[in-house]
Length: 377
Image 1: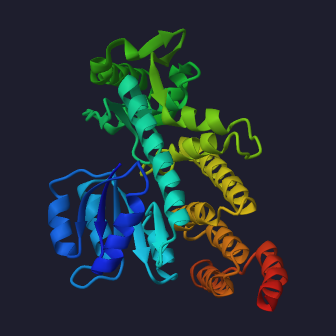
Image 2: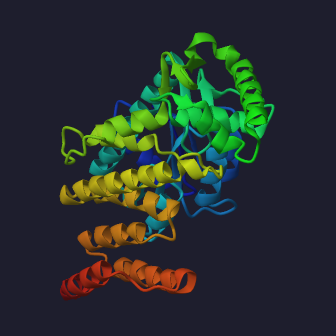
């Protein structure tokens, strides 16, 4: 794994290099005490991981991390800091990990395992994309070929919605009357039928570039989308989580892989009423699975992993209770009373100011029972 090290303290930089040289997986391709020079060098190289000090003069590590992510989204960031509270910011920026100074070799080994797992997930995802067409319905609905979204020019918004509706109901035939009721409810039947036939023709013409892999078949009194060797992110997500198994050592990686498919809301950015129920169902499946994973990591004392997942919920749904609560429980497991209190009060204020509601009994009961025991420690 190609690594770059950035720290304005030469001794700290040399010590980090010394630790990494003990691990065969790393190839150190650059080390810098000047963050501006490091930024310039990174525009001309591709690396797997950047070990980055947070507090540096001229350009702090958090700003530099954002620039690095823009230049190379596949590079992982590991923050190095002497201050524990910077760990919160590290997770908010979706960094792979953070290391507290003085760095312990065992902690570097833990980071290495996490980095290798992240790279394996990325490699598998790339292979999946390259092996076949991929339909993405989470976040920004699109068709991906060879790892790139295909630009489709829809003649009308009705044509696009008809295609998406057939994809949404890809397991069945959709009747013509159902499509007419959806797209042209106020048209007289003859005109509506003409519009339907014209729109189906437009869609077939648009997806012709995919040949037999994506096609619209006429069946009885309706249409069905036919997919051949095409993967759909929603199907992959649901298939892996549908069994609702308890998280354990044997399936934790499978859970992690499934959760990566949920990159955003189902049909995000589109006001499709017909997608609302599934949008809510997918969100709840992701949330409940995410919380099961967090709970497993907490029970197994892998609190950094638990925090990483908790921050994802907190960032994605800042108006929901779950992210705050998972952070509170994880910090409580780590004995960090100050941070438990911080997120408890932040949640209380958010609910009152934004939603004009109070905390749930579940959170209040947990806090009152836990905070007392934490204060005694």
